Image (cartoon, rainbow, N blue to C red; front, side, top):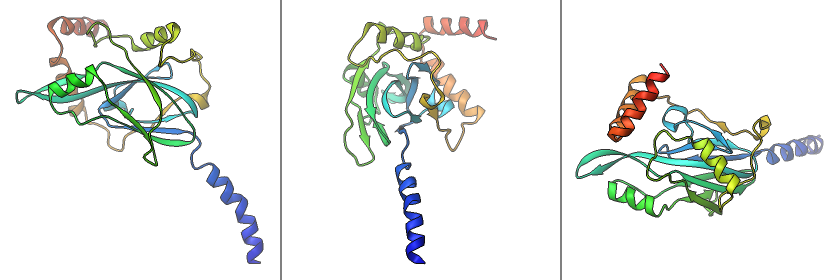
Length: 215
């Protein structure tokens, strides 16, 4: 009787084992905001929890931007990195994207000059990827990142991919895992105020003009 039960259970065990990972889960620090995923514009991780992403198996392309508070002469300042476009390929895995510890504005500027990020699998092994900074002559706010990524892919480059379909199939779309704790309205306002105060006078004017149009 035991042999029969074991024989019946073995196919089930094999089935569940083969489906432990049926896609690619990418985890990153909350400061690493996924802006464009496989050609589709996303939002800030502070609001949408885009630091936990479920991706399809195979080749993926993600535009990240680091946003965090750094110190400049004991004063706090908001730092937004030059967006980083990465392309990698993986199957049925859990990956972690990390960056060096950055606390000061000087360290942040050094990161922009030479970004050092790591992509590792669940065994701690490095995963190969291609990296390209999408700079726009210093202007980082109010950009159409989805269009910029699409243009980059058309022109080709080290981190370019074949143009994605405008209406991808459900199973190939990235899925964002909601964070366990959602930010309160007060926390969102603090975040937005910090971001606004870090803008230049010209960028503030652009933002206010945009806000009035979308009231």
